[in-house]
Image (cartoon, rainbow, N blue to C red):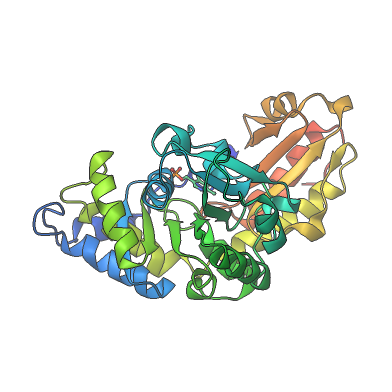
Length: 348
Ligand SMILES: Cc1ncc(COP(=O)(O)O)c(C=O)c1O
């Protein structure tokens, strides 16, 4: 039987309808006269987020890289959470390409406050780097898929703006934040200067991100995209898939959240595994493994033929719901996880 793949919401395959949409896309040279499918996706996403302009890029990492590089100068500092994706998983692009340092907030589940920004911003002193940017992540991946409460985001944005700082949101999973909160993308984007969104997570597209912001920020990012080799030619093939994902796969994201809660509730009943199911907000389940069951890596390895998950820390495991996961998968995985932990699981 094919293993149930909970490693990430990035593991999905394009559906036949998405492949058809790609084949039907009108194309042009996006670096010369522009590609109509790319332009239409950029316009659609800019409107959805209520911002002036948008730029299509291959990945979330590139969108974040361009956001940071276009809103900072080498030697400046960025305020962000110590577990954010930009710091943890993007090969230190903030340092390698932007020449910036980071100053960390250490809030619960990756969230922080306007007070944190005020405490961490550097004062004008030649010893210090200048602070220029604040980065928030919504939903917060290593924060367990946490959603930013809108008042908290408004507070961070208000204080940052007063201090002359720009605010970038890594919104790789902004769609999940919207499904969980009932808010629209523009409601969150209002309290940011730039936002990156991904089509390759909960929306089930194989690639693609968009960086959204004001005209000046996006014009800068467009030049920088060329510098890092991210300007593509008949990229409408990709943009059409992203557009299809946006039109067809956004409405079902709530199902992923419901399934994540169901999995967490089952895991909470298994001796030796710990999770607070009431804290599951979106599509991610992080749970703890008691050392009597081995390390998280050993626990995952034991299940790898049937249920694939990632060890995220020595005793912590992550399971993520996505387009290909069904209610049956969740029920079956719950039993298999219980068996691997030495509990019996429910009768088949
Ligand atoms: C929160 C967050 N931001 C950015 C990214 C980067 O996206 P990509 O893999 O498309 O570079 C990811 C990838 O999983 C992510 O989880």
